[in-house]
Image (tube, rainbow, N blue to C red):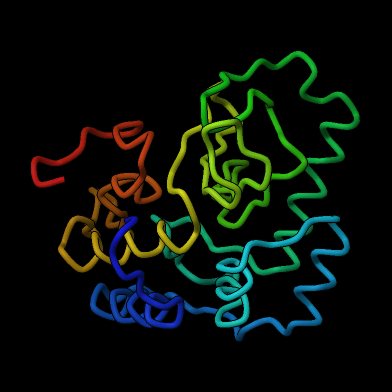
Length: 213
């Protein structure tokens, strides 16, 4: 999205709320985190958060745990859970839990099974994360968003920044790319796993991209 005016984070969160309301989704954001809470999280992890992540957290500190999940049923993590998930993955890596695993390196993403400078910001609930990457490979960008799947050797570049990803998601939501459909059991699902059709990579990971994608 280089070369065009980027919407504000406040506008993007408002657009997410409107889209959820139109789709009758029970999406509930937490109130924004304080500067002190964000600083404490940075201190706990020894990392400086990108400006757009800080801005987002000040406006909406993730989703409430009983929310239906904005990102294709996955939940935007509250600050305390960002720290908790990041520390858990760090501890597992330090204990050698991933020593036998191999990962595919790409020009944008380093070939590590888990990088201690990845910040999980969206969680599936079963071990998959969208992460803000603070340690990219030579062709990557600090603050880029990547997809971590615990059972896949590939890591996918989702967007060059959190704000870019949110802007693309909002645009695609509003143009009708994503629908909520009921399966044979009446369970309401998104028509794309984790809204990956708005991703730079991994766009056909679960299902083929629709003709208008």
